[in-house]
Image 1: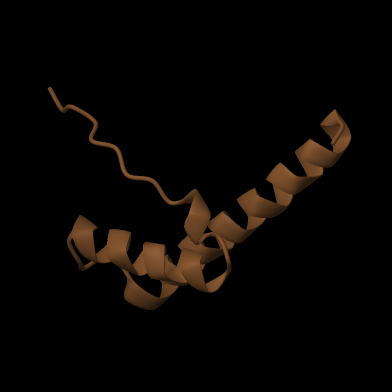
Image 2: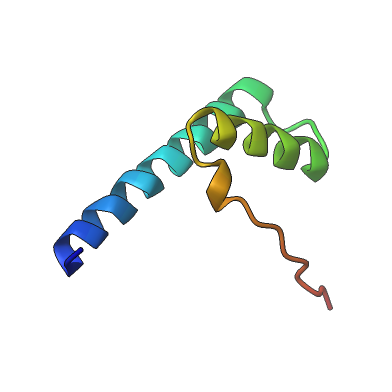
Length: 62
């Protein structure tokens, strides 16, 4: 796979992820805790075939 093909694949994945995020935000709105959005986004990503790209990392907060 050359660089152009890889870039196209990444653009398509990015478009799907952003689409899931917009649908999630529009349907749930701003009233829930972060955990609700995380689990709902994970479900949406799995439905679109992006479940393999899911990861979770703890970011230390100061």
